[in-house]
Image 1 (cartoon, one colour):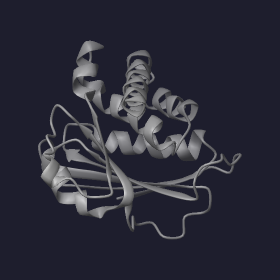
Image 2: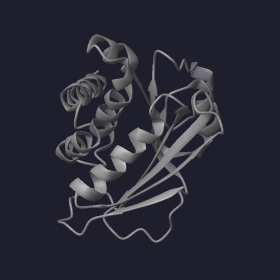
Image 3: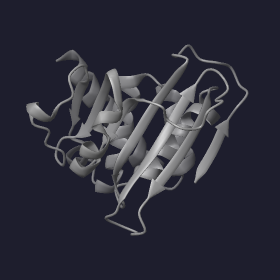
Length: 197
C-alpha cells in the first residue's frame, strides 16, 4: 500500500532526499511511526513525503516495515533505493535489512530488543541504541515506545523539524497528545545524549 503525502508550503533546508526504513513486527507501531513521520514532512514540514508499507498476514507478531522518503524536490520514484537510516525494532528486522543501509548511513535500534554484536555491524555505518520501550514505560505508556523512537529519529537525522513532528503526532493522537509528545521529547533527549557521548 502506498500513501502519497505532499504539501506546497515553504521548503525547509534539509538534504535533497532522505530514505528511512522503520522495521519490526506487528504490534510495535511500525506503520503508525511511518505514517506520522511522512505527515510530519508533507503536512507540517513543507516538504515532499511518501510512505510505503508492507506487512505479513498476521495482525500481530508478523514482520512489517514502513519506508519513508522525505525530499525537498518532488518524488519521482516511490521506492527506496538505498536506506539512509534503518530503524530496527526487532533483531529479525535488523538481520533482514542491515545490508540495505548505504555507506555513511545509520542504524537506530531499540536497544532492549535488539542486541547487535560487534561482528554483525556493517562497516561504515553508525549505530545508535535507544531504550525506547524502557523510556515509554517510565512515562506510563509502553505503547508510546514508537514515539520515543521517532523523537530519536528526528534528533539523529534532521529529516523533519521537531515542530513538524510534534504537529503530526498531535494530529494522529488527539486524545493522547500529551503522553505521546512527552515520548517524542524523551526520544530527543536520549538521542542528544548519544550524540554528546
